[in-house]
Length: 182
Image (cartoon, rainbow, N blue to C red; front, side):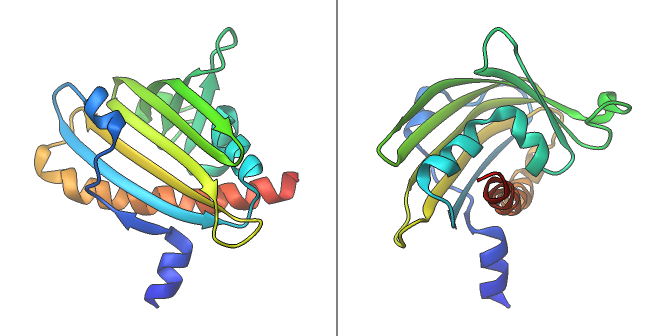
């Protein structure tokens, strides 16, 4: 059973710090949530990378999420997550304004640093891709270190664990979406 859960969710850690954490620590009142998800996907690195940085397409594979991308700057976007994220209940959804400040990809290796600007989440997300151990696969690492406004601090650890599980599941959905498009 544990193997099946790991295959679905990816490998989950909840306490790793990265260079991005040191240069852009989360700020604001609320609970600090840190998590990491490591997942290997059956996609070539360039396909996985393009799927990860296609911000609008996150609406297709992140559950209960709609993403609006700034027409004048494709590295600035807002994700709405929660019930009604696509329209009718947007006031109930969590607003997550972001800017991708580092987007580097070359030869199968990619790194993207996203600053989370508020109002609900402040901090940093870092996505990396590299060729997997098996030909035609990619290793993805998704790290988040954020402060969640209005979340009590005692809920930090549980929120990180749940978030990591959901992000691991979402990466599986991203893999399926990317395979159908290529």
